[in-house]
Image (cartoon, rainbow, N blue to C red):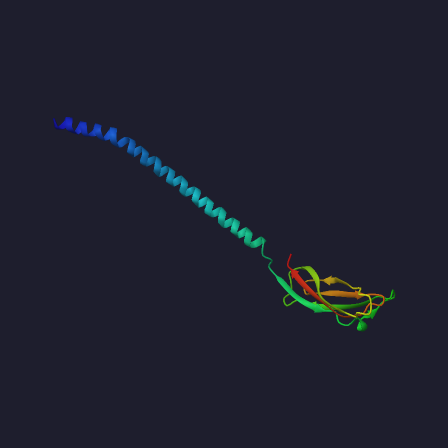
Length: 153
């Protein structure tokens, strides 16, 4: 009779335990698969964060304002245009010539004459840049304030 009890117990375990054991094994397999997916997503996120940090922040940026001064002290060329060259040295040299942008932020002029002016970057290299301020005809400028920004490429 004891053999029959053992056999009955084994049979009971087979019917009741086998589905649970199978289900537990399936859950463990799904857990491992989700762990792998989670690890891959974490790695992808770290890669994207690294790319974002490197592409969206310039390595070197400088800003400032240069003043062109009074046009009565500027040089006159053969066409009757007046110009002044203003050079600026960067605080720290760039690896290569940076991208430059200019903007006139203040203009002081003679109210009794026409106001004509032109501002451009004449030269830029790793160490600094030169801005050319120009006017012509009867225009009289007391000062032009030029804001600038330089960004590494």
